[in-house]
Image (cartoon, rainbow, N blue to C red; front, side, top):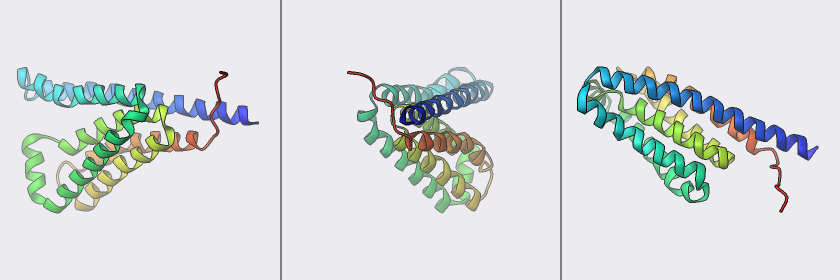
Length: 180
């Protein structure tokens, strides 16, 4: 019976990673496409690299060195929560900033979800909790405070919530031990 539960947990982790991979692929293409449309040129290269390089680097760290990645990814998740709180407190000033510079919070939540999805494959309980916090808090604060650009936050957060729940469910099952 433990073997069946462990296999089911492993299957849930793979499903979560697959959902996250599709989400990240579509999101990267959409955000990069929009950036290369406006502003375009070298500015688009720099803006895309500003979020894509950290996403790939932290995702690799979370997937390959999950024990080392726990502390920095927890700190990054906390920073996203603080950014969301600052945006909620600033209200109209933050909306003006995002109208001028683009949907910063939505992109940050997207990047965080992609990174934590990679981490969660190795550490499903911690990854699931961080995904839920990093997705739900910004989305709820965006809904509560309203303003232009906040409609994207819940849409960006939904896949993070789904993957987080899948990881928590998979982490609740015993893991199969590899023979020594």
